[in-house]
Image 1 (cartoon, rainbow, N blue to C red):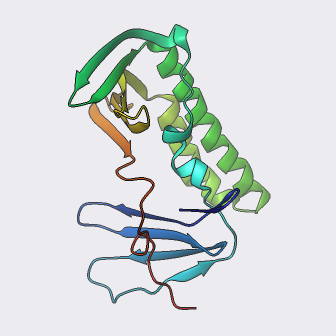
Image 2: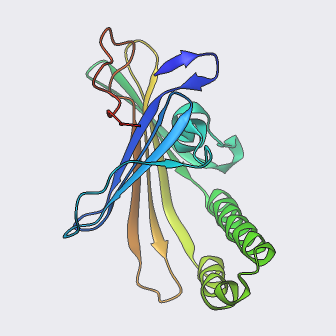
Length: 195
C-alpha cells in the first residue's frame, strides 16, 4: 500500500510445503519478520534492524524486466477472457546470462562472508554452491506476461528445465501476480503487529 512518495506498507508470506513459513512486513517505515516452523511454538513478530528487503526487489518481475529482444527465440500472443498473454520462449543466450547473474550473486555473498571473517563457511558451503551453479544448465525457458483488460501487467510466470551437475533435471516454476489494486478498503491487507 502506497503511503507517500517512495513509502510503502507491504506484507509477504513465503511457504514451503510441510516446512517453514517466513513472513515479512513493512509498516510505518519499519520491517518485521516472523518465521514459523511446524511443531514449534507460535513465533512472534520481531523488528528487523534494517530495511533489508526492498519492495522493488521482491516484486521486480512486476515492476521491470530484463528481456533483450535478441534473446527471444519465439513469441506467442493469446487472448483469453479479456486478458492478453504474451509467452516468450528464450534462447540459450538468455539462459547463459541468467547463469552468469546467479554466479555473480553467489560470488558477492562469498566476498561479503570473507569480509566478515567467515572463511570456513565460504570454503565449505559457498564454494560448493558456486561450483554447482556454474555447472547447472537452464533449458526450455518460457516467460509469460499477462495484461488485463485495463492494460495493467498483472502476472508474470517463469518456467524452465534445470539440469544440475547430477544430470537429474527438474522443472522450476516461479509466478508473481497482482490480484487486486486500487481498493477502497485496505484495512485487512497488513498484519497487526504489537510494538
